[in-house]
Image (cartoon, rainbow, N blue to C red; front, side):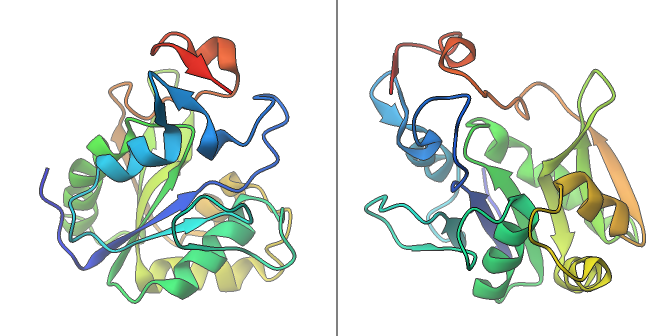
Length: 187
């Protein structure tokens, strides 16, 4: 997959992972950490930032204080990227990088602030989206305090959005049992 280097990717990897029972970024499926699966889905030249308070052995940033929720993580990641477009992905959706080209194309062919995946069940996946930098900044500014704000609220703060039909790659996995559908899980 070829991605324009003017699109940076924010990878949210710093939640408490209470349902998973272990740091999601460090969980392995068939011997590969989820964070590494996400990174493998990006072109080498794609700018990215991993948002996590944990030591993952790769460069990370974190919201202050840590564990401020997804929107606080998105804000921290956005501040670390100087790109025209900013994608938001969650570490527990390891196939989601495969949707970035489709999301960016939909965003560029519209005048929207964000392109967001709509899953087959109709649920919007705010952690599988591509924003214009200006649109993301405006939405974050509209929210004011981002700590503990749900990601759906950030999508709701967008002035305009385009919804892109998902194809299953947007699926996130919250438990080890769910991940077992992908392969052998190591917590």
